[in-house]
Length: 145
Ligand SMILES: CC[C@@H](C(=O)O)C(=O)SCCNC(=O)CCNC(=O)[C@H](O)C(C)(C)COP(=O)(O)OP(=O)(O)OC[C@H]1O[C@@H](n2cnc3c(N)ncnc32)[C@H](O)[C@@H]1OP(=O)(O)O
Ligand SMILES: [Co+2]
Image (cartoon, rainbow, N blue to C red):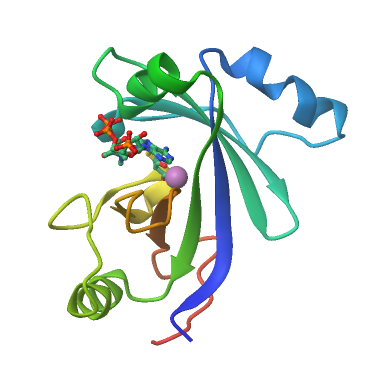
């Protein structure tokens, strides 16, 4: 099987503390400190639920995809992300099936991951991310190695 886990569910928010309120009330705790992912123009706060993260995304600059999303749609569900063992192989496989990726190559994600996004039109109206965890990293499951 190509996808091994629902890796994370991402929520766009203009303010990480305000966005955290429901998750703290649910009894969840942030996974370590907030992290800036500069290539995406976001600051991330993550909450673990079982084997899946809730990823709160706040824009750090006006040209961030999250700033554009908040401007057009307001705070809310931004994307779902699926873990794969070999992202390059998965991109090649899906492209051969006509999938439309938003970049030619994977980009750096949170916590040392590599990520790639599929166009929301291909995702039947939702933005889908594929994530590859590196060997030895939390979440790496060895599949396909
Ligand atoms: C923290 C790092 C990393 C991780 O480790 O997990 C991340 O998650 S980073 C997350 C932020 N980065 C990204 O989202 C990168 C990929 N996104 C993009 O390239 C753009 O956001 C986009 C998806 C191409 C949209 O860009 P936009 O300028 O808004 O383009 P359009 O307005 O033309 O949108 C096209 C079409 O898609 C609809 N849309 C846009 N965003 C979403 C969304 N999140 N979910 C569902 N649909 C979305 C938009 O409404 C347009 O639809 P139509 O109006 O029907 O054409
Ligand atoms: Co993500």
